[in-house]
Length: 253
Image (tube, rainbow, N blue to C red; front, top):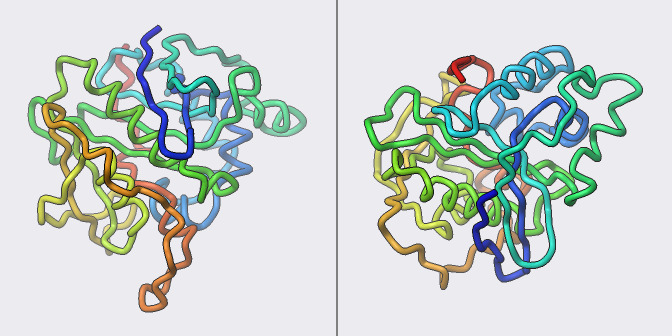
């Protein structure tokens, strides 16, 4: 098990583990308009989420496509658990088991969100990986987005195939921009199609893993509202756009 130091100014720390069926209950309970719009592309229904999570469980933890659940932990460290720690046959948390699955991380801490690292996808060159992160609605405004982003960044640093992380952030998602900046990413000035909505655009950000992150930057997500944006704070805290959550990028081990 690899360990990375990941404590923000609020003492937030997360453990990354393979995303799978036992996280379905928490995702279904914690998704909202913000996640559907900014990250997932649409609202997950139990059957389609179950299918996706079953596929995600088959992806190798050192493969080209990885999706993680982030669970809060104490003690000042973020852990990357290479084992599933899950039951693949739970029915993806639907029905009577949903409450149990929603506490899938209870032994190691409550699930607060997740994220992904994809070495495959449109707009990626050799040495680049798409990085996304997301925070469940009940967990926002507590600094978890920053902790998840840093844990994913440090996971990518341990992978010799990855030199640069690519983040795709809607221009109105101010909170996610602060999280990205705090992790060391910078805007490129390039605009791309939103992965979940062809009618919208996202800004391309990149994070050079050889650069030292600016830990002095304030990444507090308790931002003042901007009435001209037409969005509430929760919309802006959802996370970065997921490139291909609904498509199966790779079933290869």
